[in-house]
Image (tube, rainbow, N blue to C red; front, top):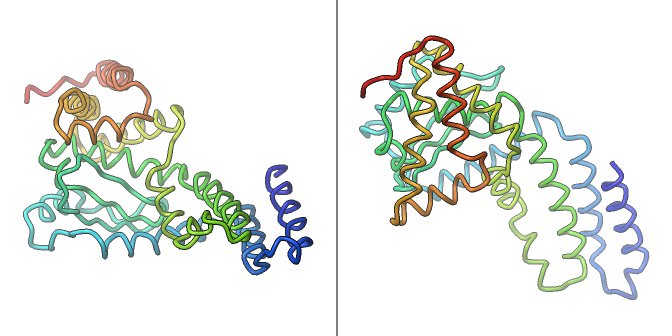
Length: 262
């Protein structure tokens, strides 16, 4: 709250000097409104912002058709998975060789063909469960608040008419990118791992697939291909992969599950 008050105070001081500094008062006011949104942000607000961004992202991406083998496979995997904590889920596959998948606060789950090619059904389902875990545990809400505060600060800079003003021209896109590239804490990642583990169990799957998906990602990251570089970048902010593998392995073993032979 102190940080927000400082931002608002700063914007007020800037607007009082508008004549001397040639400030755009509309942008200054916008920064105040954005900062206020960050304070009062509701789950519905988060879903609304992210939903708008996902619409843009879907339009820019190559989305596999409903008859694609990838879409058919994904929909079979998630059959019956309609919502999480009251938020309707919707699934699409992006035709993209990157090893990636993500879920957003509006219930959008997007899976890349690259990760579908690399993983078995159960491993893929574990990764999807992990991503949905971030949504169910509302890890995105904190990130969105921070994104709005950052956007407000950007508006303050933009009001001076400097080159930095271009940073706010696609504010919605910037907010969406912040959510999609969210840097979660180790605790949050571990919580999402546990959610994915239980997600597999609830689906009647062997939760060993959680550890095996991490093993596969670790192996991919150790290569020298462009795909390996992408995987390394994707998981650079996550807890140590070896530690995650160990946690999931010990958990499955303690609960009496046997590692699949394939």
